[in-house]
Amino acid sequence: MSVLLVTGGAGFIGSCFIKYILEKHPDWKVINLDALEYAGNPENLREAADNSNYRFVHGNICNSVLAGDLIGGCDYVVNFAAQTHVDRSIVSPGAFIETNVKGTYNLLDAALKAGGKRFIQISTDEVYGSIDEGYFTEESKISPNSPYSASKASADVLALSYFRTYGMPVIVTRCSNNYGPNQYPEKLIPLFITRIMNNKPLPVYGDGLNVRDWLYVYDHCSAIEKVLLNGRPGEVYNIGGHCEKTNLEIARFILEYFGYDASMIEFVPDRLGHDRRYAVDNTKIRSELGWEPSVKFEAGLKQTIEWYMNNKDWIINAGMRSITASQV
Image (tube, rainbow, N blue to C red):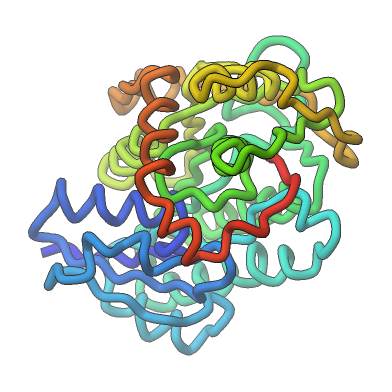
């Protein structure tokens, strides 16, 4: 029986990954370490609560003693734990350095002291910066443009150094923008959905033509599983959906679904240092590990909208109704 430590598992992607693993690997034990900050919600894992192979630990990855105790009994570590919202990083960058850099260091150090555990560092395509044409590959230079992406880039470099210096089996994944159920509504898609559900206009930064590559969250989970089991240590794997949409296109799709027109779009001043376009080449993970995204964007977005419409209590109980204009 394998034992997997997932950090940040009460958040959006981490909770989906835990549910995915418990379903795909019913003989595995999963330990979820989460500090339950504003975006961490135990309700995201209500389906797993009664599973005897699931254990929740309330704690912070910056606690080196706790990290060491938990990692010592595990076979694998998957680190989702992070401060992730760009707007928050612009206002309060210190918290991002503390969690994303120092916290990752604590986990890496504990994994090394425990004999060199297989360690998957979950990162973001934002570390590459913006690109006007073409796609970033795993060999592209990292050039982060926000305190958030800079903190994630720092954690990536640190993680890979543990492979190069100590031979620890570390792998970094860099994914494009995720969407799906349980995502905290400060991010673009759930923000738009929850606002239009309350008959409020959709705030769109600048001209709305910033481009992101979108991936359904469970497609991301399947990619991480393949990397965890068969990825090559010391490597970076880009996980992209090759589904580029402007923020304006997203807004219009959601408005059309609810029967509203473009008059519900409210253009707001652009974010500081707002990257124009993210796009990653997923050839490496496709060719080496046989991964492909399976959920088409239109179908996935409709499923996501329906999930939020059917889970209004989740939104209310998580204190989401006060969310204001924040975007990815």
